[in-house]
Image 1 (cartoon, rainbow, N blue to C red):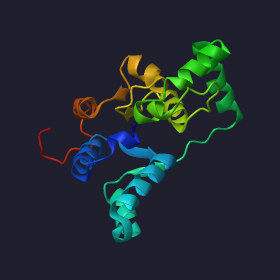
Image 2: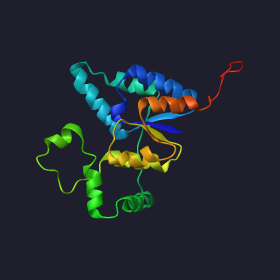
Image 3: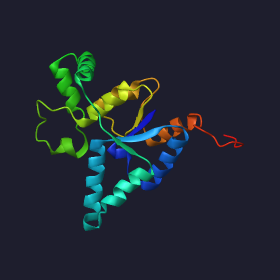
Length: 182
């Protein structure tokens, strides 16, 4: 079972430490996609400038532990995902509107006009990977279209921070110590 972190949810080291401890106690792996790692590391490097310590950043992920995973998309996976997306968005216009709707905040404000054709973002790939594993959840504060299926699924699988904590707390403890009530 995995709990994925989106970039927008991985801000506080103290909160991450508590979340990872709870997840570990429930047998849930906390993971980030390699591009989320890239974004987090770039943000920290900019924030700390010359004071950025690569080993501290990577050691923290290892200590928590948060695993960096990649999404392998082979031909059968790509075919499955393409077929599913074409059912959700049956026309080219529907698909372009779905991708455009993922533009939010300052990014959309910076466009003089919205591009007619847009590439699929990494968030779509992460969302599809989470969808594929029925036991997985993701913490994201992003309300974009790419997360829609996970938000409306039953049970809900695109979670806020508080929802993720509640979900983890609802799981049985993984391996309680002998003689300890759980």
